[in-house]
Image: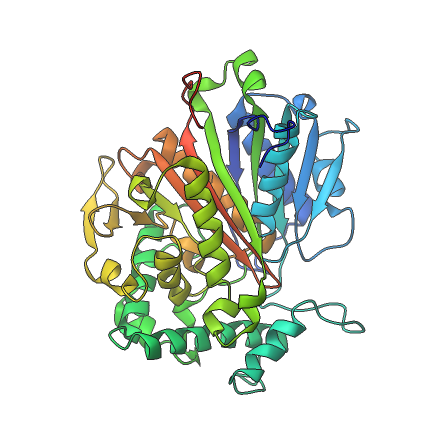
Length: 429
């Protein structure tokens, strides 16, 4: 992307991050302004700047009225800055981060706050039933290519049921196409994420689970069980994004992490062909990752740590291939050959292919999924990883990070990060 008449785009850096603990819905007495205040203050404190230095805000949420972003950010101050409200389903948080970065790259603003929050119910839902659903085309197509119509569980509403069903059919498609893969591979991914969650104090579910429990817990829609799924959650997350000039002027180089590439891909014709996987975002993630690798001149072998959108454990396996960690059909090899190691802080994590740690935070399956905050929580984790400050979750020596965040309807956002380093005069990045 060029925003300066063909000149290379300005560099943009994350200099402050913050996240609340993600809570099970309806279990804590708080509201979205509380979440926004807590996450926003944490990011500002981390950045060592005052809210008055923020020149614009991009707020992300899905379940809320218009201008909820203003109401949340007014908890931080009343400075009159532009506030943009973003809604892109489950990729809302990454969409806010992307817009914050582009505002900085445009040169109009030097320092922008991306703030995500969500106050949720105990399932997904749609509030405006008197008009066409934005995901109706996707869910109708799901049935048209072979999914059984109707609810997967009598207690579920249509939206929750359809989302689970879409990924369940994608998993069945994958197993049929690559019969060497089994349900146990999806179980192993869920096991990994839940085990890694024990070191994340902000996770909704912070405990290890047995593989037997994961496999036998309530079957939502074959092959997806309850513990292979990301629970909804309440919570907030935030990131302060600034220009190189702002960073240097405020002596923030020590903590700065550069967004070295970021791409969003929305639905293409491939979404509506004959594949449940492509309907659920596989080809979109693959294209977004390709663009990031092309931008940076890097490959998956350069990446050390990833946060991916494991709304269901099967989707993490799909992303092993979409993000080029494994050839198509060989994603299961990564989890089968994963090795548990102990980092310098005493935390355990699973290393895939002797190279990658995926979802050291525990992923959505453990953290929970407050839709507007998820992408910014992923960002928070990766920034801490590249600073070397993730404690027992730390991937020792991590230098390059990658993030994947997806929302049905649809938008896949892939982001790559690197700790700040001055560039040679003619460097590509």
